[in-house]
Length: 467
Image (tube, rainbow, N blue to C red; front, side):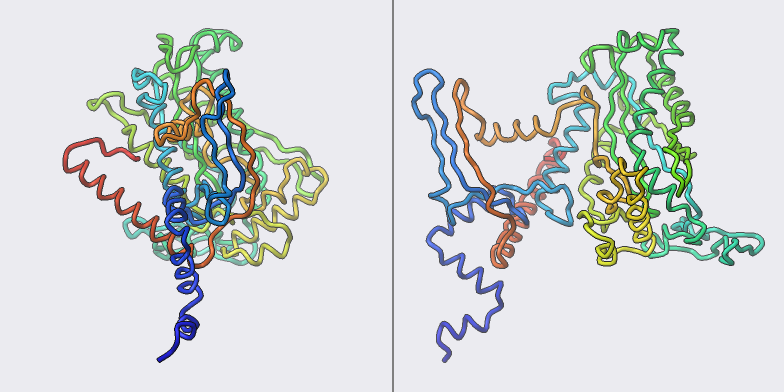
């Protein structure tokens, strides 16, 4: 029979590492840390201490030091929002996003419940066309049928009679890459934040004009709040989905003015989306571009009561929460990491269309007149440098407030009237092969327990909202 050392050598590296961890005397405490992170796939390793003292007497109320921990370190969540990077942390981020968006729709998290009576819209603003692309077929319809065959100046067909499944790799790819305006695509992304800012100002301006107010007096009568998410389409261009809400001048606790109706807000949103334009600085290499929203503008009211027409609050919040966890590989959004050189683009697992967009960013980023756009730093997102989810200050709570509330619920909040001294340093991140296997099992057990709890809530008629 083989001795123990020989048997261990026959095992995989992952199994050997898992056995090593399980035999460590401090394994139970290490497993507690892994469980506390929810089975985070890439935990951050910290070393240090915290000391909490009574502010009056100086008495030490609580002291913690990582020297007593396994490996003399503490593991904390990576907090990555992408499910492809860390599923446990993305699930937590999705839950926070759901509550953040939902609170701005129906109240909660320091937002009054009667905010649901305020005019609220779900708005979709699209990118313009930069050239025809292959489309997914619905109800068996062909991609781009043409009565008469025609070709572009590059001798490529201008139509497509195929029926594309949504998973078809051709969906979102240009019919002719030479006709496609990659420069405009990248510059539109780089100015999308500025376009949104001008859009919100235009909405306020049009509401003021409709109410017969000087534009400068609008903040004295009403306040526009929003939460928006940027969604990459198959053609690798973003669409913006936003909840837009009209409040009184003090915010969600203040009743909107009588003239602030949903219909008037809808008209202002539609007119503003069609009118705003951002002009790029002139460049001898690419000229000047006038950037606008696309022609497809969708504005839908949100229901205040069950008998009202419109989208439901939970459906909108769940949609936004689901999207923010998606990684680049799921959304044609480029790469989940920044590119450091031209050669890095070839290593990205993406379509030729996506790689051309990245190369266009890199090429334009080398132009002196476009340096302020930092296109090379954002080549992995095709020039778009905004956050996936943004909101106005008065819309609802913040992620930081939600995390603090969760910490208080878990008993990790600060002691009232106490002073805390903390000293921490970063040691690294990630797992060893065996630790990754164990953490994945912990994450799976937590996810299964959560689904069982949800099922019991639904069966008992309880609240089934995200947790």
